[in-house]
Length: 495
Image 1 (spheres, rainbow, N blue to C red):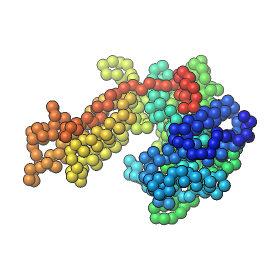
Image 2 (image 1 turned 120 degrees about the horizontal axis):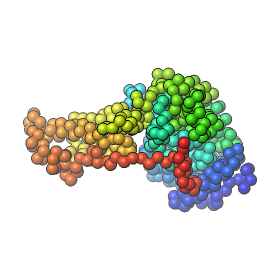
Image 3 (image 1 turned 90 degrees about the vertical axis):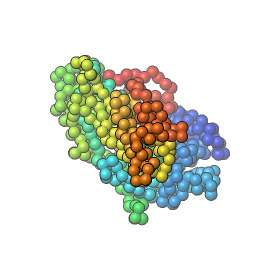
Image 4 (image 1 turned 180 degrees about the vertical axis):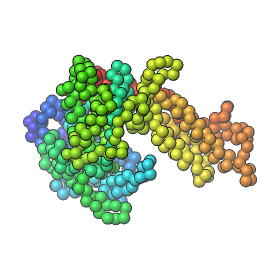
């Protein structure tokens, strides 16, 4: 197929969800292969895929099954309203027609403020359902192309990759025999709000030369926001958090960081001999591990080597319009420990031995977050609910939280969280079923609301908590994690 030949995957009738998935996956596999075979290739005709029925149907499936399906944009339309009043095929037909004619224009995102754990607020931009479908279709087309370029050190918002891979990479580097003991913890100030559009689009156009695709992506970037007070604000920088396309665009921009460190590693630290020489006589060795806008640089060498990287990172980010947060960017030793993606990572002496091991467990902040959730669920305002309903809700929250942290040294933390939850349930239950003005006694509590031992059980629902989740070591998958569109090559362990 020539570089500028139209990409076509068949008929225009609306396919069912399953056949749409097959057609999309087949086309994505081709796009990924073509991009991987020629890193300089610029794709010149992709727009017809964005409005192709199979891509729109599959995009609708993703949007309609998303947790935010019930949340409307500025037009107050929800997924349920589309299904009930318009009909999905009619709705997608209108989107397809407007895209083909060139009339499609994204509208402002509805801005809502979400409270953060530190008490501050985070801006979230909610696009309309129609804009979400077009963004989802764009992502289906673009992601396989850019995934061919993304580096192994990047883990956030990428298919088949997760936070646990980033943690495992850090664990592997900090442990014997690699011994990357110094850590530059970096924080980009308001990353999603401040990415420079010109710099982002320049990186985007290095792969995509289809002018209609570029214009559509730029239109989404410039769509603006409508605040909760009804004021329209222009978006001259940034990619609105909440948009389906935003994480991919942020990754495209931040790949500049990945490429910088990957190039250094390939040129100067590729072999054991090079790394030994640099560690003995030179500036040491380092490796970047990035999850979206959260990243660390692991350093094998001295503290000053890690400190020197701060300016290097700042210089790489500056052309993107991004700055490091001075108060949140610092160098620590692995023995001091640091927090990353909710985990606390630290090297400690293994109990009963003189050996040291790197351990990961839930951070204090993560533990406090789940305790706060338990506290909210057992607040006195919830005493109108039944005990079995409370237990079911707590089990769901605690198991979900524990599943994320089950790969660390988390057993003791899970027990402590369950103990805290048990105390909250005990006080909630005694107050709910009080005798007159007095809470019921502990013996009555045990007789009526506990099974063997002191475990809460009511109407067939038993409190299982976080400790019901088995703690198990996460398998480090190395630097070669296959995408959904590639054959599954054996994982290659990074050096």
